[in-house]
Amino acid sequence: SQTIHQWPATLVQPVGSPLSLECTVEGTSNPNLYWYRQAAGRGLQLLFYSVGIGQISSEVPQNLSASRPQDRQFILSSKKLLLSDSGFYLCAWSVGAGGTRNIQYFGAGTRLSVL
Amino acid sequence: DAKTTQPNSMESNEEEPVHLPCNHSTISGTDYIHWYRQLPSQGPEYVIHGLTSNVNNRMASLAIAEDRKSSTLILHRATLRDAAVYYCILISSGSARQLTFGSGTQLTVLP
Image (cartoon, chains in turn red, orange):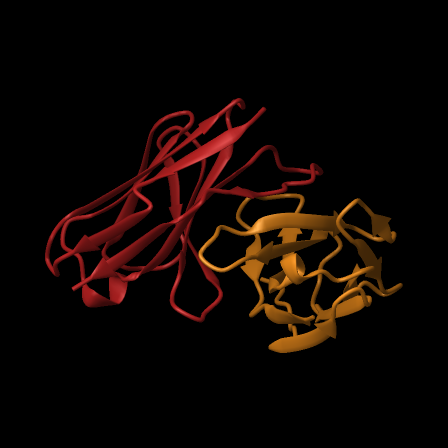
């Protein structure tokens, strides 16, 4: 069965510090991968998505970046965090496109507080 | 991108049916209608999806209007564990990029 791992669960970082959040998927090959952010009391905002290794598309201009060094690994990074980067970060995966169901499966999330 | 509109909140009594509406008037022919729910401090969970026909699974039913401009998620007997934010989402079959989350409906289940 497929599983998604996302860590850490919570993170408190000072303004200006770097960030690295990691997400890995098990039990599937060539998944589509996604990073979302959810501000307190708000809906989900798609940040990045990837359809393959090294293929990253950004949905929102910001000081965050994403990388996909391996098929089932997706990393969210920042060189210098801003206060506005605080939020609940979610990784998700899906398989296929073009007529398939494209159901997304989400990780447990990382709650980031930038102080 | 096609967008969805949902009521901000709804209430239901335990053991009663709940009908959660979603409007998606600009839906395209390749968009699937997906519903997810999110419990506090957890990632969203897939509930159900459909294209044109009504769908049933162990969690819920999905009723899709004939013109596909609206849909309704039906929980047949609400339980306290169903209290969550419910998101209606359009996902294009043609691309992984076509992802638009609505504002979601906060469902409160009263004992």
